[in-house]
Image 1 (cartoon, rainbow, N blue to C red):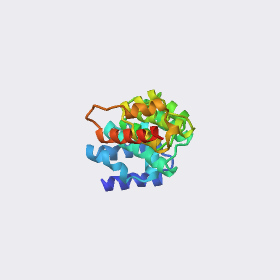
Image 2 (tube, rainbow, N blue to C red):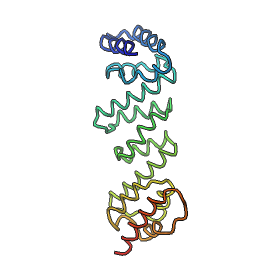
Image 3 (cartoon, rainbow, N blue to C red):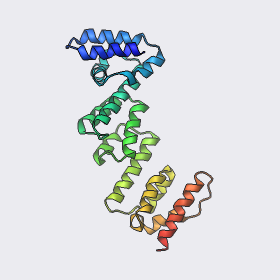
Length: 217
């Protein structure tokens, strides 16, 4: 596999605009790899090679097992080169790619960006037109609640209930750790209400304890 990666990297370095020849050579090299190799070669490719494959992706007719990790790794690499922030061009490119060829891997990049608050509210809205998994819905809602807190707002009881349903506990902890002004009295009351479930009992008890402390102030 390393030899195939070396040859592809070499093609990218010497690419002089002969697109048709390059497409044939890269397609042939990837086709010689077994499925496991196709899924792993991305980590051995240089940035110029990844960029070239992305630019030629439609013409290469990549099989799914090869396309998904290569395109995912390209966007991940671009994001790292941009200090893990999405500029408008890169974000639009990812959404366009995902709209045409949805993959869990591409969505995972957006989900991680949501967790890190690395998107703008407009970007979150745009992403919602492409992604709709449970993971995306959870993190986008949690993002909206964190934005509310950052802007000086209070989480109301319905928001707290929804965060509990989504098991977005880190956002609730963030609100509690910032003090009573980030949650309405009704929101705090939701957290201290008796919980009869078995799942997440420890963290729910910790949230209830913190909420009760704020109610006692």
